[in-house]
Image 1 (tube, chains in turn purple, cyan, orange, green):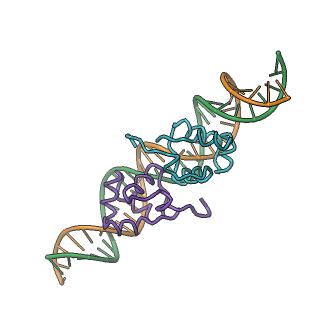
Image 2 (spheres, protein in one colour; image 1 turned 30 degrees about the vertical axis):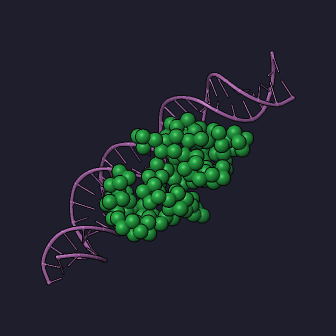
Image 3 (cartoon, rainbow over the protein chains, first blue to last red; image 1 turned 180 degrees about the horizontal axis):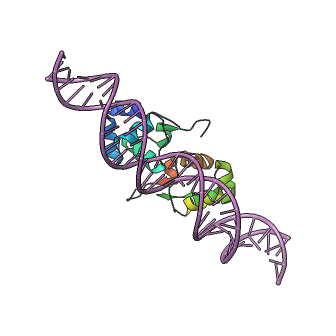
Length: 66
Length: 66
DNA sequence: TCTAAATGTAAAATAAACTTTACTAAAAGT
DNA sequence: ACTTTTAGTAAAGTTTATTTTACATTTAGA
């Protein structure tokens, strides 16, 4: 699954650690998702989208293999 | 996490098995999510919402504890 | 340049999602 | 009433997400 977390973070100008803090996960979890090492849970995806003031589908996009 | 899968299924008039089939999981997985025994992955949540022609946030809602 | 902040990474452990098989019960159709 | 479809459940197993600790690298600022 693709995502635009890096771009959204840049817009808000917040670090991975700051985002992690706001959605209550570790910094490593945000890093792994941002680098697409794995896909988040729906709960986490929704929290992240909410921080960015966007819909889940605007931040995360399904890919072929998903 | 709450969801309106049952209602959306009723609108489309499809069974849990039919939905499971369309999003490529087992019937038990749909049943468990529908009964809120656990929350789906983001990938699955997006596929389910897509079947219903709705946004993820329209089908799934974060709760206090999430 | 020196330092601090931010990011990338990795291994081991835990938790949570999902599968498989299988059985029960309810609901709907005939 | 009988049969079929749909839904609920459960235990054991596999896979994936997330945490923890820790260290290395890059970026930015003073």
